[in-house]
Structure formats: C-alpha cells, structure tokens
Length: 159
Image (cartoon, rainbow, N blue to C red; front, side, top):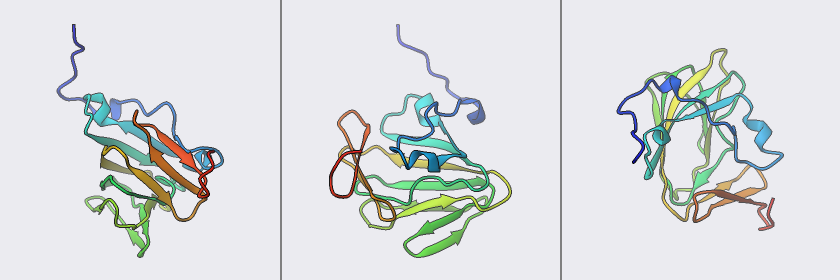
C-alpha cells in the first residue's frame, strides 16, 4: 500500500531539517542560525525543491555560491535580508524576489543583518550533474548520482 501524502499543510508545521548543513568543516558552523523546512519533500516532489528558510539575526543562507546547471529563486516573506552578489549588496524586504540563472557565474547568498528573523521561500531545480562554485572559499561541490553533494578543495582534493 502506498503512503498517502497530504494535499495541503501548514508550512511552519514541517519540521526543520535535522542536519542544518551538508557543508564540510569548517564551513558548516557558518550556517548557525539558519533553518530549512523542506516543503517540497513533504509532498514527495522530486524535480524541484522548495524550502521555507529562516535566518536569525546575523545568520546567512549559504556560502556565497553559484550553480552550473540549477536555477534558484527566492521570495522574501518577512524580515530584511541583504542579497550579496557579484554586483554588490541589495537590501530585500517582504514581497521582493530574486532569481539566479544556472551557469551565469553570478555567486550569491543572503545575510540577515536585521534585528528580526528573515523568512523566505527558496526554490531550485534538481538538474543532475550540477556543480557549485564558491568564489570566497576554498570549496567546490559536485552533485553525485544519488543527489548528494561531494565537497572538494579548489585543487580537487576531498574534504
């Protein structure tokens, strides 16, 4: 018998991911204050992901990065995170959104410099063979056949 999935649910009721980050040490600790609720997974979605992400004051969404094959999109629901890209800093607020085209080389992330929790939806596809680059850190990543990230130093040696 197959498992019955909910047709609707309260996004805040989806538990945060048990593991806050897949980054290797020493980078994982930099994700303190970030919580992701995997909304897409709650519905069994496999072709794209949807996360309800919260950033405590001082927290960041990820290391500044870009993707080779996966598009990303964020929509701010609450708070005032700052978007940092190759073009500089852009203040965001509820109702604003940003998109990141795969392969364009524009590294990005959000930082919450505000006094309140920032809350946003992040949506991304799950294109196989993706790779991520991190211009500010000694890190690269490849998505393996099982959908797990494999992290490497920029010289190709593994973490």
